Length: 308
Image (cartoon, rainbow, N blue to C red; front, side, top):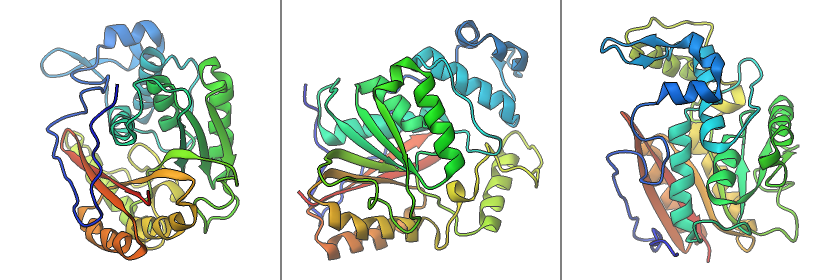
């Protein structure tokens, strides 16, 4: 069954402001910790009551968050092995799932389509988008990253889970100045590319953002040596920040316009949208769409463009 298109002409950007997670997202409402503990018994040692007496975890505890993610991936996506190198980004799964579900609407494919290929730029050590996309929609993924440690971790996850082996291929991008070159082969075609770019412009800015997150976790004081939920340099910041990173991706996408249906990227900072939209108009993108997403108090958006 076809889904309603979110595409528009490059001169008109369609926006929608959701109040909550995408309707197809499996992570609405409170976590059922009793069920999660059945799948991942080690989660029990991290449980504690909240002020209302319900079970929860300490979201300022990196090990507790990692174990919760293992339980969620086991219960909802059939992942039996998932682990991260120390210091790697530990992603919030509900928000990552939203990107996948909005992407499914954008590319207008059947609910399950094993022929759909997606390219994940900067997959990280966690391989989270290929996991959710392959298990939710049957898509196959090519996942790339510039970091050798992240590549090793992502490959281990893909190869250690029987439901991912044939769905996910992981390769290293050997040139950190490129996004698609060296990754997309001559005869490749992808329905879409996706990316969660580093959105800070420096290590200091990344630390300041992390400090704010620590304070928001029930008044927890910032821990200078530890970034909230982890994350290494290439995952959290780059010269010029998010705008420069996506600008480079847009410019290079022109060379691969016949091999990709939709190019997409998360945009964390709303003020980056207008300059990027102007660039897309300048280089001749025929369709541009902005899809707003909301996860609790966090607002983010997907910028999507197509030359078709």
